[in-house]
Image (cartoon, rainbow over all chains, first blue to last red; front, side, top):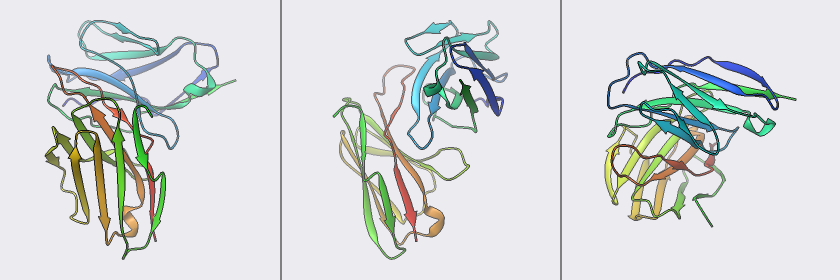
Length: 109
Length: 114
């Protein structure tokens, strides 16, 4: 499975959009991009996943570049409860979820 | 109850004790997983069960013994653990279908080995 690169940490003002980038330049054609988040000392929470089209659900939007080498998770109106570690994972259909260090997002009042 | 539940939420055990962690999923999924998360480290996959058969064992020491009696329940039996086994143990489940499926995690059991 392809490796991902994420910034170690980011800040976002409450009520503003949080844009979390992820680079996955070695992604293969059949690999999906998944996003999970983990609030302190809780289990990870699935957010969204996509293959090549942009995706949106009640939690977030996922924008994948046309060459699929990078993606951005967008939380449209961040709240204090969105403070968490966000993991970007690239995974093949039969592959495992391999968690890296993720991006620690701090939403500030 | 909905989702994935784990009991106990906290466990302190000595190195000579035997204990078990329990996971139950109420989502009708057919695959279950055990992960370990040590302090300041990424999650590590330990075991995978698909349709109640163990399909993956990531070089986990034999002092950890999983059991999956049915598709809704998963256990992790612990014996003669070491202090470095202190960690957050997470259970997850998924419905394996097609090309992509998401995993749903429980809240975890915080294990301390003294």
